[in-house]
Amino acid sequence: MRARYNMADYVFRSFDDAKESVANFKNRKQRIVFTNGCFDILHKGHVTYLNEAAALGDVLIVGLNSDDSVKKLKGASRPVNDWAARATVLASLKMVDAVICFEDDTPETLIAQVIPDVLVKGGDYKLHEIVGAGFVQQNGGQVVIIDLVKGFSTSTIISKIENQS
Image (cartoon, rainbow, N blue to C red; front, side):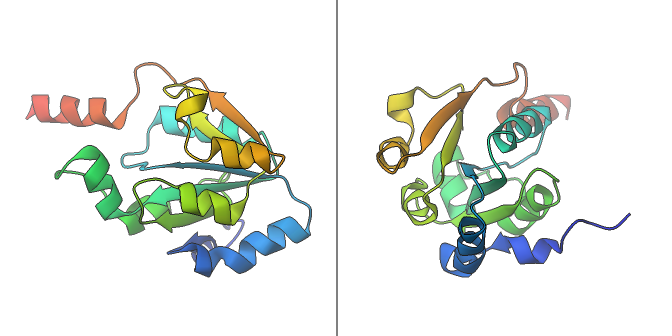
C-alpha cells in the first residue's frame, strides 16, 4: 500500500518552509488544528491524543520541539530520538498533516504564524497555562484540552528501560 502523501512534503524545518502549505490549507477553508510537543518516544498516549486532536478539524499541524529545545525542557539526556527521526515518525501517522520544527522554548511564535482554528494541549495543562491560548481565542479560535491516557509517558518508558538494564 502506498503512503497517502510524500512525507518530505509535510515535514518542515521552520515556518518559513511551511508557509505555502499552511496558506494552501487556509485557502481551501480547512479547519486547522495545532498542537505541539517533544514526541520523543511515541506511545499509545501520544497516538490517542493526536487522533482526538485531528478529529477537531480538517488538518492537524504538529509543532515539534527542536533537539536543543527538548534538552532545555527535559534535560541533557534528551531527546532520545533526534528531530529528524521524531518528525519522520509523526509525519508517517495518518492523522498528522504537517510537522513544523520550532527552536524556541515555547511554540508561541509558531502559533502566531499558523493562526490555528483550534489549539490543543493535554490534560496536564490548565487553560491559563497554555501558551498561545489567548492569541488563538482573540483570533476567533478555540482552545481544547484533551485528557491524557493514564500510565503512558516517555519519561516512564525511559525509567522502565533504565531499571531493566
